[in-house]
Amino acid sequence: MLDPAAPQLVVNARTLLFSWIPADPGAAEALVPAGLRAHPQRHVFLCQYVVDDGTQTSGFGAYSLTFLGVSLADMDAPDGETPGGWWTHYLASSARVRQYAAARGAPAGDGETHLEVSDGRLTAETTAGGRPLIRVTARVGHTGTEAHNGHHRYLTRRDDELIVTDYPYVAEPVSPFEVESVEFLAPEHPVYALRPTNPLQFCWGFYSPRVSFAYPARPNVPDEAGDLHQVPARRARSGLPSGS
Image (cartoon, rainbow, N blue to C red; front, side, top):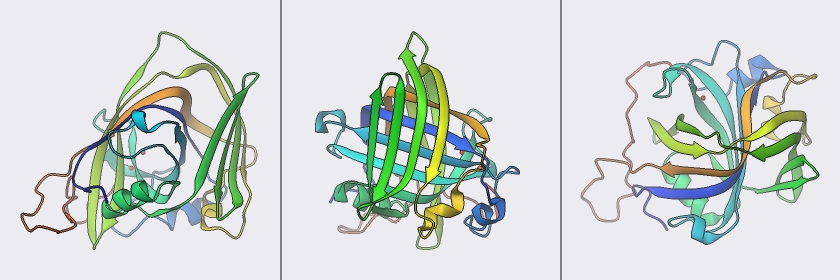
């Protein structure tokens, strides 16, 4: 098992990240725990990405991942504009990644993510237990000279302790980029609560064939050998409201 206190680096992941207004804002808001507040518009965010080769990571190996969650109020990333987000679902193909993320408070489960681009159309699909959960199609162009960089802030909870972590990233987005459809294919699955409105109300996002990011180190690791390092990257003050 990877040390959950150690940092990890991922480079050149094929990544789709965007957000929308949910069809059932109340159901989305209900997934935000007490002490945090959902974004006023109850934005839902989705990230689907694939790491094709183990040489693209510092320790994870090749894997795919889908995570979803609800954007929060009053917990912006360091840019002061991008709201932080509460992870509600985190579906990784790798047991190593799931163990590492769970030790940091992520709601880690087993799932597969596939991204394919053909004739300018991206298809992104997430499956779990052999059944499709989410399928996204989008029109995508090519990368140019533009790059995005900054931090995304995500919140988790472990052993009743709120963990707030800023993830640095650099992305080369394609242009043009247009999401055509977002399908939630399993009404019985918990992710269905986050399905978008029909028609889709897109908020922000991008697709990039090259996104690099890091899971930062968690400071103040206990001295006791064998401890699971139940120490937050940053402890949220009691009652502090939050936001992605």
